[in-house]
Image 1 (cartoon, rainbow, N blue to C red):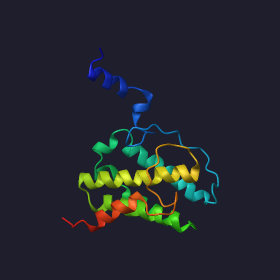
Image 2: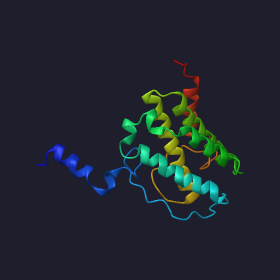
Image 3: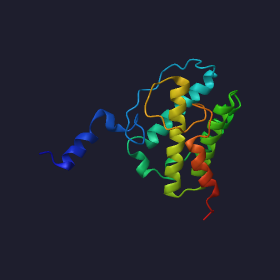
Image 4: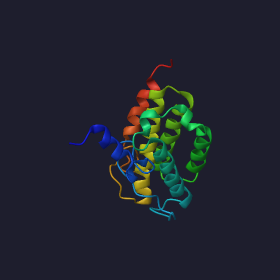
Length: 172
C-alpha cells in the first residue's frame, strides 16, 4: 500500500512535475523549438512572439502554479502588453489579430483587476490563447487544444465568451 503523501512526494520530484512545460491542467508539453520558421505565412517575429509568450505563461501557470498565482507574479505585465501590441501591427490575418487582441485584453485584466480569482482566470485564458496559437502557427502537435483562438476556425472563441462576461461584470 502506498501512502498518499508518499505518492504526492514521488510525483513532486519527477522530471515532469517541475511545471516549466506543463499546462495548468498538468499536461506535459514539448520543449519549444530553438528556431522559428515562417510557418503558415506568418511573419517570423509573430511566430517567435507566440513561442516565447507560450513559454512565459506556461512557466507561470503550468502544473498547479495557476492555483497560487497572484498579480504580483506578473510585475512586468505592462511591458508584455506593449510587446504584444507591437506584434499586432505585423499581423495580416484578422483572426490572428483578434487572438492577439484577446491576449492583450486578458493581460489588461491582470493589470487592472488584481483580485486572485480574476488574475487566475486571466492568466489561464492568456496561456490557453498562446498554447493554441503555438499549436497552429508553430505546428507543435500538442494536446489538448482549448478552443481559445479564432485562428483555428475563425468563429467566436471560448476566450471571447468569457471575456464578454468579464466585461459585463460590475466594477467593485
